Length: 140
Image 1 (cartoon, helix red, strand yellow):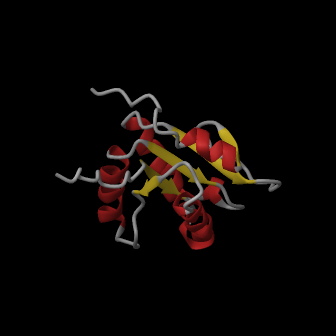
Image 2 (spheres, helix red, strand yellow):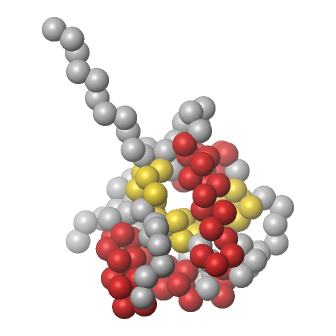
């Protein structure tokens, strides 16, 4: 009898928060990095895929953030001013979802207030943030 193959691991559920008008490419690059076959970590993108009216957007973002294991704020030049990013960080804090900030190496960007520790975007840092044996968030 042939042994059943287990389904491929999807990786950590990550909500990528970014300044949509200016920095979508940062999120896409992060997703691309997690899909590289030689990369030992994975992330399941839980971000919102399309623009929505404010009332629907907030509810959809909250639902996605609550089901995520991590919110990763991708920092660009204007991210610290982005109202949507600030709201996503607020929602993550409300639901005890860990938040980290990632900036491209050698860039000078401003932090998002309250969005957690700032990391340079390196392969090793991504590996640490997305490792599979991370302590699970507390259940209420």
